[in-house]
Length: 100
Image (cartoon, rainbow, N blue to C red; front, top):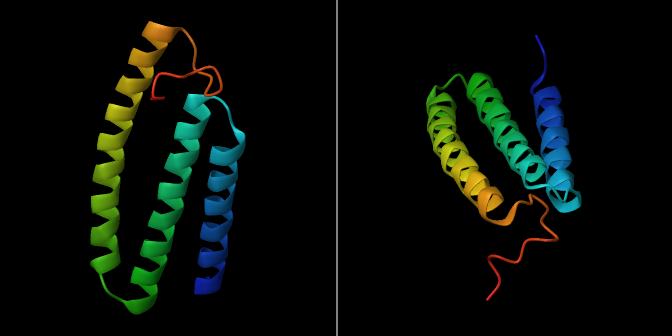
């Protein structure tokens, strides 16, 4: 059986890669994928603790997080497509649509 610490280390590594990707990337699609990677690392942590504690509460939270992530993906991609059609760029540096 794999110890809990290995799951938590993998989850921390995935979350760190996601945060680094959000901070470094300049493409909206890449940033979006890094956010999804962070959500999946949190799901891995919830499932690991759920399995370690022999409770199904963590798995229920994972189901809720996955439902929210699916809605976020649909809305996020719709916004990205709308911005691309209007501005013809996906670069964060060139986009000033949300500035005041």
